[in-house]
Length: 490
Ligand code: DC
Image (cartoon, rainbow, N blue to C red; front, side, top):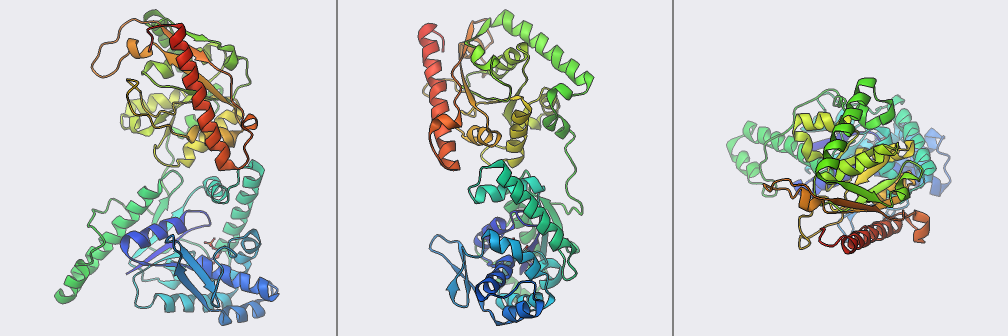
């Protein structure tokens, strides 16, 4: 069984191939690492990477092998020396496309790749696996993602948070894409019959499940086309549980979601009829909510007087919370986009309506890069983003709470301050479940915004963790103060 995964840099091939190798008991062949090793060998031996003859000789001489580190990740050795980290530097990034475009290098590598894979079930990833190395592979996948998402992944892998640096990564990826897909020998292109997967907004689990479906389907086909004795051998392979193939073959990447326009456009620039819909929604919901649940945002100037583009976070007690905070923002000339869990989009009309009032869906429990980027851009445009880090409504103080830290990452990327807001009273007015709505006073309070500078921590991950903790502590301190000042409100 050969599984071929091709695609541009940063499309997630390595992560997916590694997962598949582990889950399906396949040997992992990272062919990019081999071209990188040749590039490194040239650097170390002082060989000019534009000298095709000399580089070709290096490629024929080197011995590349793969091993496994204690943590289960793959290691790469060059002539018996571990070079796993040395092959992933900007210097190697810079020259590897030129090296891999040399026909003699490709011949030598393809020969080594076929030899390494001989007599093994393999998942191989690269640029020409389905077209050249294993054209008969039983499963062929062409993995893509939009360039911004790929650059962002690379930046995260390399612990880079600076937007300019990420732009440079993006420019380098685009440069390599161009070189890899326009070279004469074995250019990057989808193999015939390859299944296209656009991973821009998919989770790793979803991608792996999709390809596992293809592998299981191929294994099933193989088993049924082989003689009976052999069939037993194949179907007895223990690690892979049979799963229905969930995929349909698509020749073209997925179509754009018609709601994308609303997620990616400044709300003030929506077409007139959508701005009218927004105005009507604000007026109707504003009147009804003020009548039944007279509400107030105390110390609202903390938010209203600030420049637009804040990350607003709030405790979550009822369905009223997003409605009234959005209305109060709008009443002060601002625009706020709530982030909501994409599960709600199963209801078509909800999906349609939420998009038009500026809400952005996020796939929970995943690094939903598309949603992160959308929120970042919205804040950079001056729109506020609303996140409920508790993730779900908290009906009682005994309920276990998990804080979702995605808000800190979004704020970090947009260089936005985080605005804590707390709410009390809404739980009594709109208790949820089958309990009836009832009139009740609701109080919110805005606290002092938290900036990344004041955290006094260096390093992207540490900063995000500190922001998550400090900002949520402020939310809960505000909530406790509200409870003290308005006794009986929860
Ligand atoms: O996947 P990667 O970024 O590690 O690959 C490094 C380079 O190697 C990439 O710029 C293109 C080249 N490559 C190739 O030409 N053919 C392959 N099968 C794999 C990688």
